[in-house]
Structures are given as structure tokens and as C-alpha cells.
Length: 531
Image 1 (cartoon, rainbow, N blue to C red):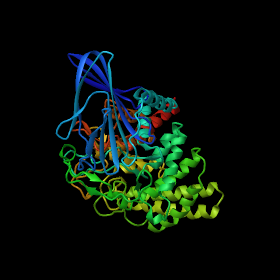
Image 2: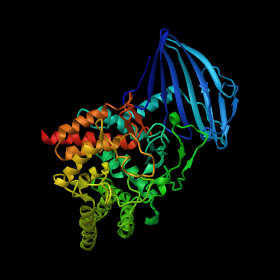
Image 3: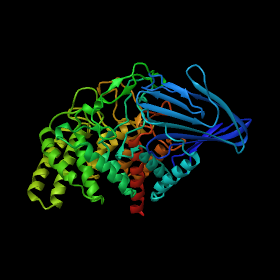
Image 4: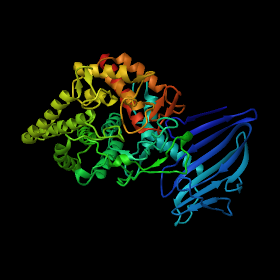
């Protein structure tokens, strides 16, 4: 029998192995980064005796490069290929066996064996060994100190804490950038081609991430994310990308890895992401909204925020009428996506608000006029009178979960019949086994074969929309259903396949956990307001 859990309020993973001969616990953790990166493992016997086989098969270059492996007199194993060195320090003897490093060991009650895998640049000296006990103590202390500041959130504090810790773990500490997920090419449909590299930082979700962090009181992390965003997008507005590397890198060239079979045969495996070269108008609204929310939420003002707005608004004023690839980064033809236009409206609406706050009537009138123009066009071209709701794109009959944002960003008040009808139509059309699709891939030409799981962030948006229109009980039921999908250690992927009853897509997914936090906060606040 195998079961696992994180130690309370930490990112220290414990896996218990129980057999007829004994029980042992394997403890895995990563200490805070210094000049090296370390992965540490402690194996401790709890009862009886348990025997383990160890196999160490290391490849660099996405599995293609066999490293030069040597054994030290102290028993360490060193693997070098190009710029990288990995050093395995083991308390048990290891030996080579046909391009593998292997060993066998046993632990009885009270006995421990330890293993440390360390990366550092190959041109530098091998790093000194670290005390695994000290590292474990420091790592636990760090995470518990971080988590203790999380406030109570209804009856879901434990889940919110786990999501918060996960967001922190997805953060590149030197820059504050938050990656979408820690993996690449985990498929959205098993055996299908919707396999993308998510190890980058998207501007989309900037507002929701900032709100989640600020509402929980984590202003340092919110400020670091805001500052990363401002550094990343620096430059000409026409060159703004929808995503960047963890340090703000822009060249994210997408290529396929033909020698890898893919997760459960799901090809291709992709490195990089061509979506970085797409036009997606909604990111301008995301950035503008994030800057306003940061200012109103209490983050210290940043002069680059004002400079950024001054640069992107005139540019967006010229291009908002053009089609784009949209929030879902379609690989098909560009369209006039409703959500893109709504977020363009957000950019100018927030600009008018900022100008009003700063006592600039001329700018207020100008930006409000642009916002009003977009608002009128969206209500005229994106609302389908026959369906009685908003649709995915101008001239389309398809629905899209992103339309739930219409009420959340203030484009329409939540009591507007058009918004309520849109929420209800999305429920009717896009729910599958109680979970929400982004859109129906069999009805929309997005440049790829149809089929994918339910997008979990969209289901959290539906929770928020139901709260917004006063259907709190329905919102709570859906939220509890979503919580039940978390795996045994409280993590969520990008999507869930209700037919296979398993998570699919990259993992763990920041967008899903941001959605969990914000939905918990919205439900908690609505409960307080009702009481």
C-alpha cells in the first residue's frame, strides 16, 4: 500500500510504503535555491524491514544526450553534459549497470538513508555536500512561515493554503515571474495533439493572480509579480507579447521533439510556445486592469505603470478593431472574439478611471469615449438576438466560457438580463458532467482536431458568475465538486476528463489554483454579506 501527503503547510512530500515485511516513509523536498539547485530524499524505516531498489538513469537535452558519468572516491556519482553537472550523493553504495546507476538497500525501524541530487554549472567546482537534516528543517520552517499569514477563508482555508503554496512554488524567486505550469506537453486529450509547453509566464490572468495574492495579504508576492510584468513588457507596444520566459525572455521558439513518445503516446512533445507570436488583444486589458487593481489594492505606485499605460493605450486605440487569435490561442484563422473586445474595453475603461482619479478631464473624456465605442459595438455585434445571449465571436453561434467574464470585469452589471442569459446558456451548452468546457471543439474551427477535457479555471469562473448573479447555493455545489477533483495532495491540472475520471493537461496549473483561491474568497464574502 502506498499513500502520500505534504507535511502540513509545506512543500515537503511524504510517501508511505507499507508491505507485509514492514513500513517506511520516503521524504522528498527541494531546499531554497542558492548557488545550486537540490532535490533531497530521506528514506526512514518505521516498522519491520523494507527493501528498496534504486535506479538512476539520467539524460540531458530532453532525453537525447547521454552524460559522462563518473564515480568519486567518496561514493558520489557525477554526470556532466555540456553546461550542466548533476551530482548524486548517496548514503548507500551504488554501481553502474548498462548505462544505469543502481543499488539495493534496506531500512528497519529507526534507520535512515539519504540521497541528494545537486545541479550546478559544469565549469565550476563540484559543490560541497549539504546537511540534509539542516536543509529539511530550514525548508519546513520557510514554508510554514509563508503559509501562516494566510487568513481564514470560509471552510476552505486548507485548500486555499495549498493553492497559495503551489503558486509560490511556481514562482521563479529571482524575478517574481509565475509560470503557468511546471510541465510541457501533458496532453489535454490522451493520445491527441493538444500538447503545449506551459513553463512560461502569461500576462493573461495577471489581474486574477494579483487579486488572489492581495486579498490574502501577500503583497510582497503581488508586488514582485507586478514588477516582473512591467519589466517583461518594456519596449514598444507593438512588440508586447502575451507570454514571456521567467526572466522576461522573448524568444520562445516552438519546436517538436521527435525522439520522445509523449505522455501515454500523446504526440508531439513541444518545447517553446508559438502562441508567444500571436496577437491577442485581451492582454492589453489584462495589463491595464492589473495596474489599476494594484494601485487601488494598496501596492506602492510604480512610475513604469503610468508610462506603460501611456504607451499601450494609443496603440490599442489603433488596433482594437482588428481580429486576433483570442484568449484560447487558436491555431486557426483570426476572428473578432468577443472576449478580446471586452478586454479592450477594460483597458480604456480603466484608463478613464485612472485619468479621473488624477484630475485629468481631457484624458477622462477621450478614453471614456473609446470605451463607449467598443461597448456599443460589442453589444451590437456579439449579442445574438436569436440565442438571447452573447456569443464567442462576431457572427458566430458558438458559446465560450470566457463570456462569463463580461459581468466580472464590469462590462455589464450582473443583474443585466443579457449577462444572466449568457451565464445560463453557457451552463446549458458547455457543461459536461457538471464541469465546463472552454468551448465546443466540435463546433469551432480552432485549427486542431476536436476533443479536450473540461478546463478547470472556466469552472471556477462559473462559480464566480453564479455568485455574482445571486445563485450562491449553485455556486457552492459546483465549488465543492471542483475541490473533490484535487488529487491526493491537493493539486489541480489544467483540465479534467470526466469520462476517464482523471486530470489532463499540464500540472500543476497556476490558473486552476488562482481560480480556486478567488472562488473561495468570493463564496466566503458572499456568505458574510448574506449573514
